[in-house]
Image 1 (cartoon, helix red, strand yellow):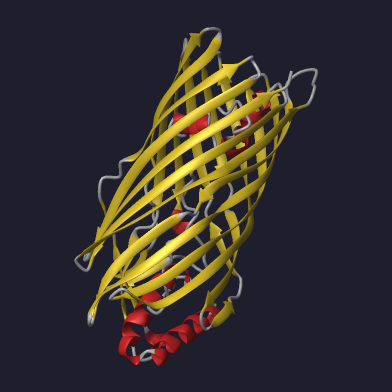
Image 2 (cartoon, rainbow, N blue to C red):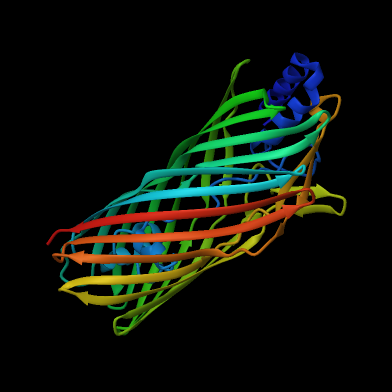
Length: 440
């Protein structure tokens, strides 16, 4: 960590030495853009509180997203590897599947009297899966292999701030993904209870292009490449209560992550020491109930984000004392699916709602510059969250020839947050297409 801090300080010092007239804007630009990755927050006021990526799952199944993500107690296809591995035990045919996701994010910021917008859209392959059920005399034993991309980092973010001589603009452009290579195993331990597990290796990377502009001129510009490796896993259970109702339970183990950042600028390339980070475990429970052709489902997930470990707890200091930078959250998912018989092909119509609160409760408001860059002080404030509308979802699926399934889902959602002098509005739209093929 000391090496990382020293490297940032050296870059700040070079910015100050290179352009005396714009030294403060350059240093502040660098501090604001680098703040999300400078290091852990502890008891000292000169540390930084990053707003981490990989906090919210983008979803990897069109059927699941079409039902608002309420899939924990359903999980009767290859997507069970991601949502509840115990559901794999209910698959009785070899299955291949894949998902394509188109995602668009818009961020509007208002600060220093200036409104700026950032918008970025990407189309990516977000899942590939294979499920193999072993022949058994009774019960079930199933294995699955898959690759999924639950964390899409793509984003464009622009923010203005006031400085001597005018308004300066910070710009961030993130492009990349972090995915999981997973192995799943599930068995029936009784006629009504299935258990499953998932073991995953986390791997991915993304590129962050950053620059600061003042009066239309670029005063700082650099790129940082983040390589990510780690591992995690899940334990799941699925209980069947008659023919109409199912209950699901899953415990997602902590994610142990290793970051390896490399920064490039016109002054050269700096490679930082690898950083370790642990995301906390989470637990979820769900139910699904069938009423004839109508299927209703609901999930609730609890995560204590205050347990994030980045060489210590993630805290920030203000005038009233030390506070947790992250909070505990309950995610709620509700969904419905209705089966229609259209010309012998099963057509399913879906709708859902997902409420997923933002875990990070603070925003970097400003940086107090010191004569020595090592003494620069970040100023944080607890964000006031506006109406968190969550995600409203729609979907449809069709079964062809009893072996090919096509599912389509659309999701849209938004949230707003603000501190004094800064407000943000985030909007996201996702379109997913999943195709699955089952062998007899």
